[in-house]
Length: 353
Image (cartoon, rainbow, N blue to C red; front, side, top):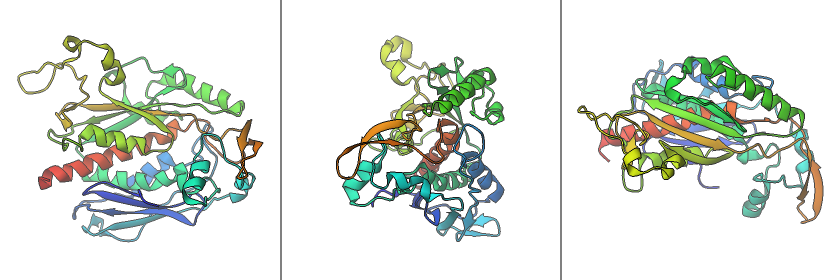
């Protein structure tokens, strides 16, 4: 299997399966001398881990990271940073019923067709549990660039949306509720909706908005490595992501140029920011903001028609521990992938590549 490495200079390679012994990764290219706060990394993992609230999967994983190399006396050494996160709460028997059955809209069928073998226990490598390694690397990338703030939050669940611009939100409220929505009144509606959907044995999707502040000007490598293109690739590599837009996004397609253009101030900032902090694929110093769409989780606790490995139509029903809405737990993953992109482009700019 190819495609397990992300980045050009700041590189992350991940390994492991949902129900294997452990997951982990190797970070290559992190500069020497970066002070690393292990507790801050663990905090990011705790934000992603299962079992943290009533609206997410109840798999109980401590997600305790163990570093194997690349750190000494609290600083990076410049050598590859190796780490693992042990799996301690696998219940592979929960997946025995899909050993020869393909879940609709899941990766089961295509993995089997491509590789001729699949790890049906939790989806193996196709499981969103793989993202735990990304969170570790993203936490290190954040510490490499502490002046840049990265704040993601749930902006919609199903048909329930925040009706305020991000500038009117208090990001400190994001972690005060299970949905991770900084608008408290909307968060309550979202949580109630997720609980109702879960009772029905169903799932629901939503969107995450991410805002990056204090990003320096000049990050991005046109023409094929534009900053927004790499952010899009990063987000679309996350499990269940169906769409990405930055700045005015698809709404910009409805506007006239006279409405959409960001006029300059004398200091080079712009009066508006419909460009989303990126012009010509290069950061312009304004806030970078984007939105990521997540589909409903494919595994339902309802009976559905599907096919088995013999090509026969059968009926199946999900079992085990699954998220009714993956969006709240994806917040640290979105932030991590954004941090990896920015760290990579920061090193490119510094190296004049």
